[in-house]
Image 1 (cartoon, helix red, strand yellow):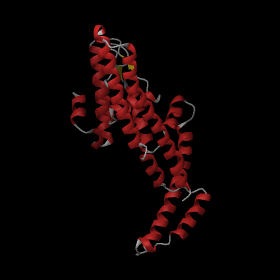
Image 2: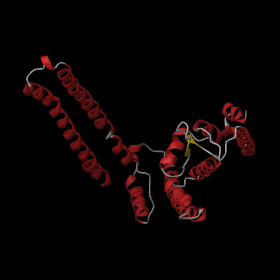
Image 3: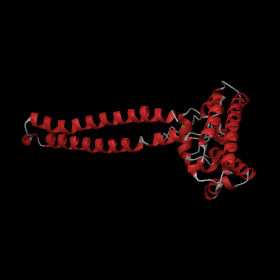
Image 4: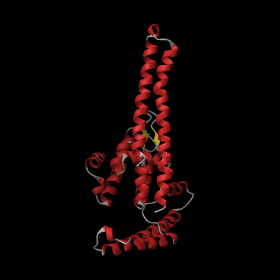
Length: 260
C-alpha cells in the first residue's frame, strides 16, 4: 500500500518529514510481509521501488553501483538486485553530498572508511571557496563592462585582458568558452566517420555472408578478397583521415586558442 502511495506521488515535492514517514511505514509493511511469508534476513526492493522512494533515477542508481558507492545483494531466485534499508540510506547520503557538489571519489573514500565526512567536506570547502573567488572576479569584471554602453567595435579589450591575465597568474580561473568550442569540433568528424565505417563494415559483412551461404556459386576466392578489400581500404582511409583531423583540432587549433 505504501509503495503505491510513493509511486503515485512525486516524493521530491513532499516535505522531508512526510517522505520519512512514508519510508518508515514502507519498511514496516515490507518486514511484516516477509515475516508472514516465513522469509528471514533483510527484505529486498526492486530498483524501480527505490527510484520512487529515494527520488534518484534508475540510471543514476546503477551508475553509483558501478562507482562502488552501492553494493546491493542478488535475489537467488531470479538474479535481480535486491535493495534493502542500508542501500536506501546510502543513496540518501549520496544524494545529499552530490547536491552539495561533493565529487564521487570523495564519497567513495568516505564509504570505504578512508576518510570521515568532515575530512571530505573540508577539502570540498577549499574547492568551493576557490570557485567562489573565481566567480566573484568574473562578476566584478562583468559589472565593470556592463556600464560601457558602446558598440563592440569600440570596446578596449586589451586593458581588461591584461587584468584577467594578472588574476590568472595569481591563481584565478576564468571560464574558457573557447575550449568547449574546440571540443565540439570533434563531434562532426567523428560522427561522419563512424557512419561511413558502419556502412562499409555492413557491406563487407553482406559480401562475406553472400559468399558463405551459397558456396557452390561463390566466385573465385581472389575476386572475393579483392571485392572485400575495397571497402576495407576505404575504412582504413577514413580512420586515417579522422586521426589527422583530430590531431589538427587537438594541436593546432587548441594551441592557437591558448595564444589569445
